Length: 251
Length: 179
Image 1 (cartoon, rainbow over the protein chains, first blue to last red):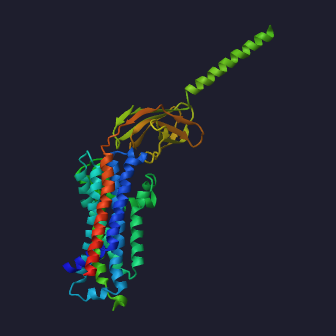
Image 2: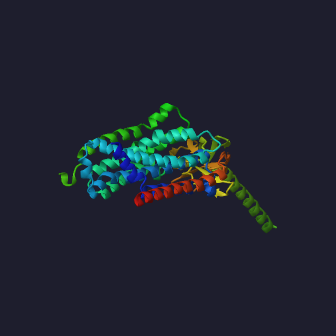
Image 3: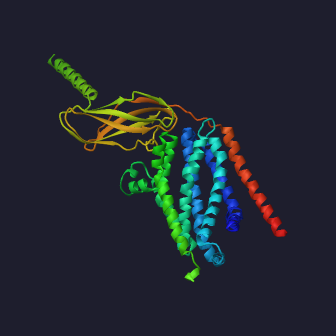
């Protein structure tokens, strides 16, 4: 299994595509961070708001990258005809999937490490850095992993990686809808329903309650419950979908 | 003589009529008063609830009143997008009876550093008249300790470090391929 994990890391993290993605993300983070001191509107924001905006961007980018990565992992192997050789190894299907999950996890960990200098610069002069990192690894990590697991599940279910990617992105956009809506729109109808159920919305609420409102641990845990539920659902989906992972044409 | 007297009377009547108009402007049909806070001086992120009274001075009930916060940024000489301040949702008063006073609460969260005048406005769906309260001064003090030099170093240094990693990775892969 260790050699399979190494293969996943070599193929996705240390590949030419992988390292260029890290560079592109670093450029994106630099642009965003620099805009906090150069754009007048953004420079007027409170430091806590600046960090919240950066965290939202980081989580959004992480989810998007990890679902694209996850949705092509199994179906990509199937399309390239390498899934057969993987399934013929003595490793169980769950272990194969688990090694792919670890590959995504390493990818995300590198993104989070790249973001640390930016958080250091943005939290300079305050004691927010530890809280920010705690949020990133306690709430951000389960959220990113949940989306990755679901995209892997889609990748196992659907034979086409294009369709799996599309489905994963649609799921992400539906859960992220409340972030693009006004406060008034979020208070009624479908938007309200999505806002109350969405793990993305609840992660943003947790961030606000933790950083800005400085609410109690109980409230923060309550806020983050949809994220944890989403993680459990994703694990169950992936567990069942791993059983469906089979040769092309089901043979 | 009579003509002069008629002119004088007409002028006096005019003054009286103008005076009545001025009085009518002092006593509007609807009066809006901000009860609390009387001022805000705090850091960005401060959440407040603006309490205001809406008084109907007429002898008729007024229906479908919409009461909302308005803010003017006196620092930048701009109007304010209240959605950023989570204060874009108005309060509705279905009916304000003759002589009745109603109290409403409007939440707001101050986000940007600047000096503002905040006031509460009321308007009815059945009239084009707009009634506003007096403004209260809001001062949101900048509390950012972000050092632009550190931002510049990190913004330039981090992508360069990642680029160095990219180059190292390419060199390593090429060496492997040659070997």
